[in-house]
Length: 427
Ligand code: TXA
Ligand code: MG
Image (cartoon, rainbow, N blue to C red; front, side):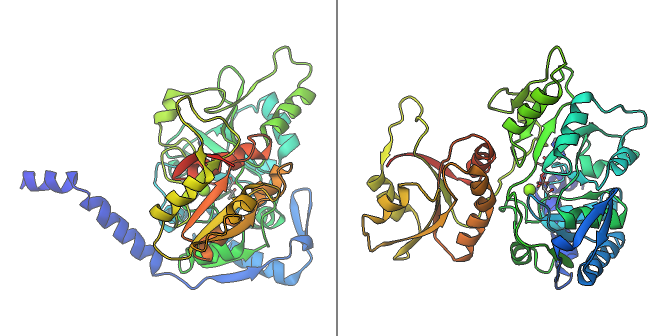
């Protein structure tokens, strides 16, 4: 009997059954209501929302009631759409994990609508550092997430995945901030997609992915930033800022803010980007590190990153474009013409070179990422592009690299995670 019990425990079956139970719990659910919100009808006066449009007010009240009934609500933020639940209610938060199929060891960001709300969740007596004060003044509300020490008797450990820190941000999207203020409670929200998929930047992306699993989707139009917030750890003893996930606030923005506002400090904190400027063995192995352990941002078809500018590693030759296309025809679907999505800057030479071959076996479907000189537009269009190409049923997607500067750093971070392979190509 003991042997049988051990066999059961060691097998994947317990996990399989718990997933089945979770799936039942989430798929039993509701047809989603998509409620339109007018962002321009919302303004703030001393952290309190004033909502001019009755339709928007009703949608927000309805969403707030849903949150207080411990259900999830999808809502727009300036970065991507979020799947929200009351952060201080473990039962509500567990619905986020089951709805997304999110691994329980990946912690969530807590969203607040005011500094007062932030102070309510921090450990008593905690003094916010001068550097954090500068960052909050400059970038909140906005796409910057900061790690704070957590008190597990206030913030349930299901949020932090038992980490000693809690990630917090104050979104600037009027719908997000008004919802949190109306609910008068901090809201945990990961991106509103099934785990592993690209993050949604429009209400229709959420509907397509989470239909039947979420009751209310607030539709505030397309997200302005287009990829997620920058996650920063400024709690290390050396006082430096460690960028765990590049995002909407660029490293250059962070450096400028420190340079300008902490000019009187003798030694100013440095901004260090994980894997670019430092490596951390503990972080490499810890499953909680943003986006490292798990498959990320992947549409349902394979994605190849085409490296057209950066140097290949020693010993690797650039592949001629023709050879790459021939390889694609062999490895991708047998459908002819093969439909290949191309995400690249609008002023890149790549699409011209690709279509100049006039190959009847391949149809190239372009999704321009905006001018090379404007990486913020590439950021805004990346997930939208991946999801649109997936939606028109391409067989394969190729993404051309852009410079890892300003928003380009976050764009390339997401593309590298979405891509199954990288090819250094000769254009
Ligand atoms: O822009 C955003 O941040 C969006 C919108 C909805 O606000 N949210 C978002 O959440 O991207 P999510 O769950 O998709 O990504 C949160 C990232 C994860 O990579 C997670 O590992 C990291 O933040 N994170 C959360 N809490 C953390 C902590 N205590 N320590 C280190 N990383 C943490
Ligand atoms: Mg996400």
